[in-house]
Every structure is written in C-alpha cells, then in structure tokens.
Length: 327
Length: 265
Ligand SMILES: C[S@@+](CC[C@H](N)C(=O)[O-])C[C@H]1O[C@@H](n2cnc3c(N)ncnc32)[C@H](O)[C@@H]1O
Image (cartoon, rainbow over all chains, first blue to last red; front, side, top):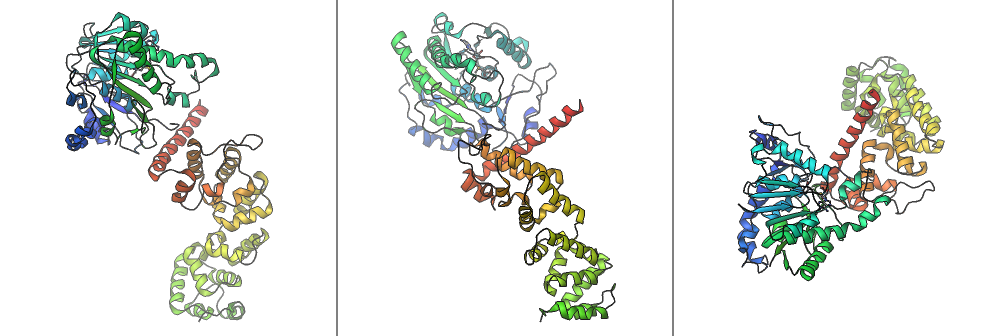
C-alpha cells in the first residue's frame, strides 16, 4: 500500500471523442470488466448452481443477480505493468474522454447492478467518481447525489460538468444536494431502487502516505472513534431510503473490520430492531471470482468482500457489501 | 609441459629477446605452446602495446604460469598496452595495501583490470574508505580482496552507498565488509532494502541502535541470488519484486527530477 497506487480509466460514454479506447488499448490497457466477464462466461453455467442464492427470487429473479451493468467500461494496465495514464482529452464540446480512479472503486457500482429506468441514491457522493460510473449506465432514470460537505459537493458539480453534457444534467435526471445523509433516510423513505452508501472512513491508503490532516493524528482521535457510529447511521439511512426489494451497497476504502463487517452487522440489527426493516446480505462470491484476475480479494470475510492492495495489482483497499431490503 | 619454475628460467632468457619486440619465437621460449603463442602474438599486435615483454615479465614475476598469463590477458587485453614499470608500481602499491602473496595473485587473475587502474585512482578509493567512511586499514584490504570492482566505482556513488547503509540501514562497517555491498550497485541495495522496509521487515535503528523487529543481516539481504533473497528474507515472489523494482526506479527518478527542478528555481 506504500507503493504507487494503480489507476483505472473509467471510459466516459458521454464523450464524443473517438478512438479514446483504441488509443488506450494500443498502450496495453484492457477493459477489466469485459475481459473478466468473457473469461468466466464459459464457466458461468456450471458455476451458477453452486452459487448459493438467497431466497430472494420472489423479489427479483435470481439469475439476473449475477449480471453486470454492460455500459460501464474501465480500462486498466495488466498485472505488474506500472504504466500511467495520460490526462484525458476533451472532445469538441469540452467533455473529457475518461476519468482516472482506483479501478476497484468501480466494483461497488457494478455490484449495485442498476437496471434501466431505476432510481438511484448516492448518499455520500463527492467528489463523484462513483456517481460518474453510475451515470455511465445510461439507463438510470433519476440519480440523487448527496454529500454533507459543501466544498466537496462543489467538486462533484465540477466533475459532472467536465464529463456530462449540459442537456443530461438537468434536475429531472440528476439531483444534487448537500445535506446530512442521515436525515435522508426518513425524508426519502422507500423511494429508491438502488442506494449506494460510500461512507467516510479512515481512507487507509491515503492515510498511509499523506501526513497532512491525517485522520490518525491525535487531534482527530474523537472523530476517528465516532466513524463507525456515523457509518452505521448512514447505512441505516440508506436502507431506509430503499424501496422493498431494493438493493443497497455499502462501501469503504478501509481495511478495518470495525468499519466494514462490524458496521454492516450492526446496521442490519439496528434496521431490524428499531425500524422493523429486514435486509438480507447478498452473496458476492460470483463477483469476486469474476474479477479475481484483476483484483486481490481478501479470503473469508464474514460479510461482504474486500479488495486488498497487492504490488502487482495495486488497487484498493475497497470493501463492499450488498444488501437487499426485504420489506 | 608448462614449466613451474619460469621465474628463473625466464629471466635468463629475457636478454635474448629484443626488449621492445615480441616474436613468436620468444613467446615459445617463454613457455607458451604453439597455439598460445600465436594467439598472444596476434592479440599483442592488435593492441599495439609497445612493452609487451616487460608486461609479461611482470606477470611471470608474480608467479603466474604461461596459461594463466594468457587467461589474464584474454580477460583484459588493455594490459598489453601497459608499461612493465607501471605495472610493477601498481603491484607494489597493492602490496602496500596489505594484499599479500596469494591474495594478490587471486585478485589479479580474477580482476586483471586492477593492473591498468592508475595509482591515483586506487589511492583515492582507499582514502575515501578510510578517511571519509572510517574503515580500518585491515577492512580496506578485505574490501579490495573480496570486491576489487569497488576501485572502479564513482567516488560520490560509493560514498553515498556507504552512508545509506550506515545511516538508513544502521549497519556498521564490520558488517558491510562481510557482505556483497561493494559488488552491487547502490540501486540494487536501495531496491532490496526499501522492499523489506515497506513490507515491514526492516527498520532503521534509533539513536541507541534499537529496533522493534529483528532486522535481517546485510549479508542475507545482498545474498547471492534474488531467489534466495525473496524466499528467505523477503518472503515474496518474483512477480511482486519485479513490479516493485519498476516502481522504485520510477520513484527515484522522480525524486532526482524534483531535486533538480527545485534547485533550478
Ligand atoms: C469516501 S467519500 C465518497 C467518495 C465518492 N463516493 C466517490 O466515489 O467519489 C465519503 C464522503 O462522505 C461525505 N460525508 C461525510 N459525512 C457525511 C454525512 N453525514 N452525510 C453525507 N455525506 C457525508 C464526505 O464529505 C465525503 O465526501
């Protein structure tokens, strides 16, 4: 984790610049989503029966759960290749061709599995990498992107402006707010088909290399200790905002069990006991198997999946857990 | 076939051959076989060495037999163009540095280039090691004996390498001498050390020389093969180390660039 992080180029389908993908592929990049998927296509049929399905088939048909949003493309350099991406070029209307991010942070978005016509809430959205990935699935009917921080919400707006044409940015499609995500749960109860809860965390990679304003500083001890509580509250709010049968993905960029599995387990019991909402953890093993050529996943977590940074595939850490609201 | 008593038989033959000329015949007289003599004759002509006989004498005086002499010259044809007198001086200088009979010969046959390095160069390295880097005379001798390549290293690089080992890794001179430090470029040292450090397997000792973990000894870090290093010291695989090697090289390159650009301002 102390070595340079690897990036992925999230291809911006709003850009009309042609040849972006071909150029990147000429440098040796590949779209990990299609590669890993096609590789597994062969085994898929034999794999499916062994994948334990939660009996959620009454809410959404089971086989569909192992599908991947087809419109998202993220190019990466192969294992052990440390080449860097050039900055993206704008097309004739100034829209940039790709967005550079930790390729592993596309995984929570893929896991969310947005379908045409669905409404999506991105509870902690800024600076907007995952929001942008969500928008690549053009099918999103309505996206609500929220973040508590005013300045970071400003960055989110800027990024959207550089990547999404104006005509697609109207309030009908994309709603940007700047409020405490914990309040949204009540206000927008049962409104969304999909909810992404990408919480503030100890940002382990960043904290390991950058001194400035480090969350592990003594002066930020209190804030750090309160993180898991905030994370639980945000996840509960996300669960509340999901409609029956809706899917929620919780994610962090931390390795800490306290901020990952423990938060999920706590939130599940809080939702059950205090709100009477039952949620079910969705199995993501098929997902990690599919992407195991690109990412290193931690073995054997009690709930959710964790991408571990590895020298040859220096992505992550990214933790994600997928839940379904049952009632 | 090859007379072991060349020293004596030889010096008696020398006056017969013209001092500055090398003939096939004189080579045969010195004890080279026909093919050896031909090869040597040709190489000597090519090198345009003007003092080949005196060079050969200097080597014979050290006790080398004809085939060892040929091997030395094959390894380092520059020796042909040296002067016998210079050679004697350089050899004497090495003796003064503590390279005694046996180790001197071993050094020359393993690293004949030592005979074409100017006195100044050799002395500068020895001075750097003793005065700036605080090695004892005995340690310097040992370094030269085990890693004569050190004589060719850039002085600033050499000093940097030793300082890095001393300050960053907390290794004392005595331990450096026992390792392959002087045979490896500083980049390799930094690469292996940083790899261990980032894996949490190496710590720079504090002022009292203490660490929370037991650091592996330098000689294991620089051990013969990368494979052994990875398996026994770093517990990692070659794929990871290769990726790391590329990353650290780029990091250092960029560090250098930063230094230049900030000093330009
Ligand atoms: C890990 S970041 C989100 C990154 C973003 N999803 C992306 O992919 O670019 C967490 C965000 O949560 C926001 N945040 C912190 N507390 C919050 C709260 N109570 N409600 C909503 N957002 C909050 C922070 O401002 C921060 O931008």
